[in-house]
Length: 301
Image (cartoon, rainbow, N blue to C red; front, side, top):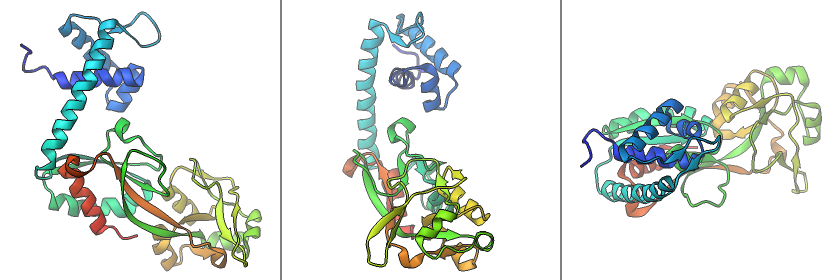
């Protein structure tokens, strides 16, 4: 009989993550543990089982036959546990840890200001929030919900639309005083266009000519940023011209801190925002369903 202080499910999860990640260090990053802690846990697991699971004689992670069999069984056990938890949580009151991943502008300007009201409504839920404009793997990062901007690609994830906002080209008055105001898209060749450091679904800025024909102006400049909020702040500092969702910069435009440019050439394209998650229907945990319903009710873009 197993000792009551042995967290067998935790050991199985760490071992499976080590195998899937291909190394102790990669698994440690995903699990937010240190590599030494992961190594010690696997060593304790092997000692308890009385069997070597991982060969340590090579630079590459290599499973022993016992390790292969234990991994296969572990995957099935974790899947069964997850299914049992989903079924139990579906009918339970919203409680537990909710892991949220959001793109930076939405997180700073919409999500975080709403969290106090959400947590007051659901006092048995706690939240772990990460802000990044990089697209993450929900399963790998163990996130319950991710908030993403832009068109969604093919995915097994379920999505709920939270809203959409027209795109706008903007610059600070200080930049325009120094460099002049572009009157037609061709004038952008003489201006610094701020770029993102990650791939976008369209590699450039969209415009339409007076006849209504669409075309793309490439992005070229001397500043690259990691996320939309950094783009906004860089534009506010007068470093260049940016193209952002209007909801994100509307207060700056109203206050005169940013000036909309080339509006008669604006194609009117809109950037959608979705909440994406794993699972649906009766298998959706109550804490996730409560959060999604709260977002749909509360978010305005």
